[in-house]
Image 1: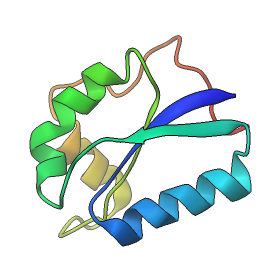
Image 2 (image 1 turned 90 degrees about the horizontal axis):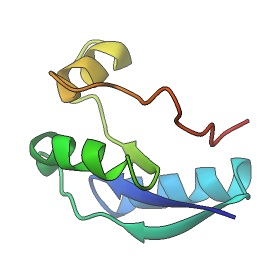
Image 3 (image 1 turned 120 degrees about the vertical axis):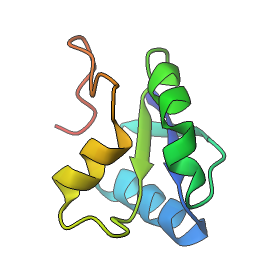
Length: 92
């Protein structure tokens, strides 16, 4: 099984991630949860991005005031590479 870490803003978000993994990616094992609450996700985003070089990280966040998901992602990832060329495909 492939091990992943998860990040969510609150207990509900964490549970959503757990259910998605259970139902759609049973080959994944959630190794742990990285600490973040609400606005902390944005301030810790660079750390999560660096950590993902070692372990895959699944992060779920609401869009707050962004008009669409691509804008929310762009805001979170400012100045960071969004993915690695050798990143494993976790879903599918």
